[in-house]
Length: 301
Image (cartoon, rainbow, N blue to C red; front, side, top):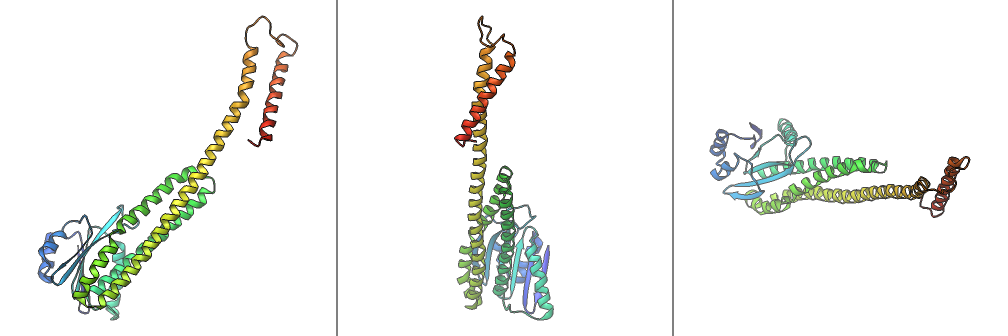
C-alpha cells in the first residue's frame, strides 16, 4: 500500500508491506540507494542507523499497541531534505492519526516542519506519546489487580500479574536500542539538515526518556505487587496447613481411643456397661474440648 502526503514542498510517503514495484518507484523518484530499497521489502531483525549520501536510514522497533497481536512493530524511516519515507509491515494506528493531523495542517497552511528531519522528529514524538497512553493502560491494570489481591483473589491474580509482567517486559525490550539509535542519528541529521536538527532530536529523546521512566516505575510497581501477592498467598496457605494440622492433631487421639475400645479383647473397660456408647462418646467430646481450649490458650486458632 502506497500513500502520499504533501505539505508545501515537504512530502511524506507511507508504505505498508511495499511491493517491488513500489520500491522501484521510490528509488527513481527520491534517488534511494538500492541497498536501502532492498531492505524495505522485508522486516529487519535489528534496529539501525545509516547514512547513504543525502539520506539517513533508521530502523526502529516499537512496542506493539493494543490489539496488534505482536510484541513489536517495525517502522523504517528514510529521511531526506524535503521528504520522509516510512515503511511498516502491519497497521500502526498512531501513524494513521498522525497522517490525519498532517493533512489538516496542510489544508490550513499551518506548519512548523521545514524538512524531512523536522517531520521525523514530530512523528517520533507522536509515537512515544502514544506509548505513554499504553503505559497508562498498563497502570490501570496494575491498580485493578491490586484491588482484587486485597479482596481475597490472590490465587487468580498470579496469572494476571504474569500477563502484565509480560507486557511490561515486551515494552522494555523493544525500547532498549532506541536511545542509542536516536543519539547516533543526531550527528548524521545535523550534517544533513543543519544544527537545528539536534534540538528536535533532543526533544524526541526527552519524550523517549518519559516513556522509559514510566516503564521503570511500572516495573517496580509490578515487582512490589507480585511480592505482596506471593506473601498473602503464602500466608493463606500457611493458615490452611496450620488448621489442617490442628484438626489432625485433635482427631488422632480420638481415633486412637475408638480403635482401642474396638479391640476384641476379653476384658475391656466400659464396654458392656449400660450406656457404654454414650460414655465413650462423652469421653471423646471432653478430650476434644480440652484440646480446643489448649489451642485457644496458645492462640494457635
